[in-house]
Image 1 (cartoon, rainbow over the protein chains, first blue to last red):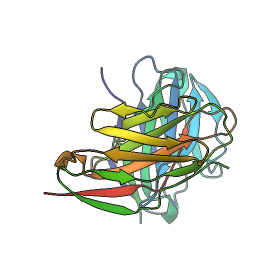
Image 2 (image 1 turned 90 degrees about the vertical axis):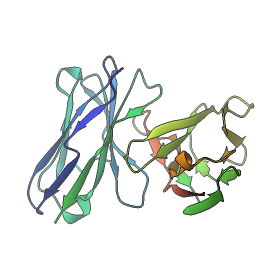
Image 3 (image 1 turned 180 degrees about the vertical axis):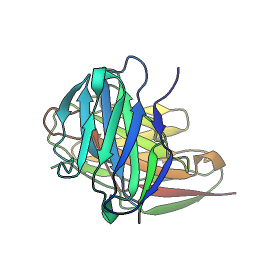
Image 4 (image 1 turned 135 degrees about the vertical axis):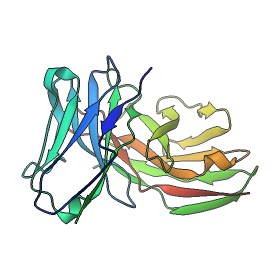
Length: 112
Length: 116
């Protein structure tokens, strides 16, 4: 069974630029999560999708972050404009109806 | 608000010995799971073990076991016969309770070092 795929693995951008991350969950997994993991901390939930609907995005900084999950499969997380404090690893995870979550390898973002 | 506290930023143990990682949590959920995840340098979070809160019996997965004290909201991980491959960051997680989401709230992690 293929795992959660994320791209790119690494990204370096200048502050105020925009960036997008892509996630392809495990086939058949209805639930998809995006987490932000700042260096030295545990992952923090940004947004949860159930199919293509948003379940919770209360911790997503909506002035600069956006996410979508068209057709209930792949998802994209976007940051525009980026700030220095957005430097982190962005992890995508998926689960079958809220069961065990399987994580991708993440995208390491560096904002300079 | 959900909080998870891991009071040990780093732990070191000799290969083949036993180590215990501590975790306390706070959640408003009444029926929930608790998790320990391992994160090696590859960054991928790997589930080590999970505990159902309504079960009094502590979960065990091969060399990994938990000591779950529900009243004290304590959930420690014991690793027996430590192996070099166990070296990683370990994160404790409890339910994230917000807007119907069933994601997780993680602690800051414990860096586990295995001495050969």
